[in-house]
Length: 232
Image (cartoon, rainbow, N blue to C red):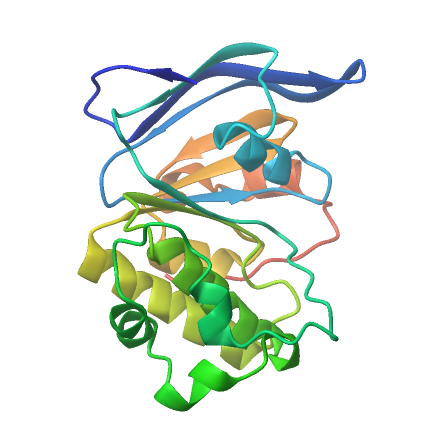
């Protein structure tokens, strides 16, 4: 990935991705500035996860450029993280595997609001919401300038979703990080995102949520039978 001086944390220009002769992404362009929140929305199979994987270098773009600000540290949480239920590893042992952390475990536990008693909990026995918190702690140990979350609320109950989004918002203000979040929840997009990117292989909208997410764009993006409600 190209790096050069830029006022943005990340700038993506005309990015396209083809895998096994199948078009995954076509002509995607956006940018994110320090401390901004970008939400990426779109139907299943629209390329959201593949876009994040391309941003962190797992996929190599077919064309276009991905420009990170020099020495940007990136925290990435994948969509799925499977834990073997026979794995005898505590939360503390798992987080201690991080090489050259910039925060101590105590500092991260405090930031993520994890009680001391959690340290000895078996990683395999955590709920989906609890596991997301631990993966967030793992990402934060590096003291990143930007965090990328791929569907952080998958399989998390409503109360857990609200708790995690509230925590992300607090971390953004405390640590001054930028966020890229893949989400299906338009209510949370309107509440927390500075910019929204509508994706279905190609970019259907991009901008401030209340300006970009017109009723027509939402219908174009999702099945017309799917209803979304938001409050102003």
